[in-house]
Length: 264
Image: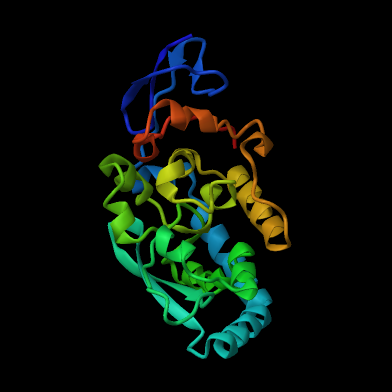
């Protein structure tokens, strides 16, 4: 079968579809309206729930945050918190607060190749893999800069490499401390290499999906492995990893072929 199917940004692609789920009975599912107002109408309780939950988690994890920050300050002999400028809601710049997991001499916007050449200590790897370095971002959820769950906030240089429609759509909601891409097996790679995860979330965000992502995040904090494609629940009908490879070397920027309807 070689049907024509449409991605969430309105592009049309022609290719093989096996278990994508975006085409049912030969019919292409139409994309949802991805404006901020439309996103709020679809999921109006998202912000209140996240604010209350983030405030509770902020108080609950405060001792852990202070301990981790203290260890980082001693280990790296530097102020344990640092701020990176990222692109958030409405495409506006904001500072993401993290606990230092790399030496202070590391370039603040080191790319993947530079990080590969940087010696990351066992402690640094641990707080990065368990997301403990991101605990200060709970405060940013309470203040409204971020959400608990959402697209990962990206640095401007990566946003500039994104498809314009994809970049605009992912900035219609608050960036998340965690998200579908972050808990997946592709979370350690560039978001451009697996853009369908954020694309799927932007168009289908709902309470059930958020609860599952938060549960997966909690398990990974306590040592669970990232979620592989075949481990996703059947109601999260993401495209298979092979689909990105089918579209060639530039598919990472445009691979946003996702089903639109998720029962909440």
